[in-house]
Length: 119
Picture (tube, helix red, strand yellow):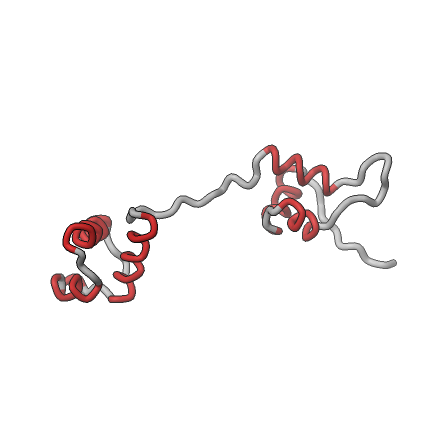
């Protein structure tokens, strides 16, 4: 069930001031057609975060420090050939997800990732 912004604020206020639970909210507002599971989810979110706002997504994985770290690992060193790592190995070592490492390699470093095949 999708709650409007006013509904979320109302549910939060009634939970904090009067201690209403999901059943009590459904009986108090039968015309809203709220589902009990939806209210329980919202009440759990209020209990953990103290807010009804959406959680912001962290899109800051392609930072310059991460790009530099991936660049160091993806390219072989001049004095040591064959020291490059695969996408999966870079993801494991840096703690960045595999898809983010792939995006850094393609979009920021403008390199192509090729799978090694025996000729």
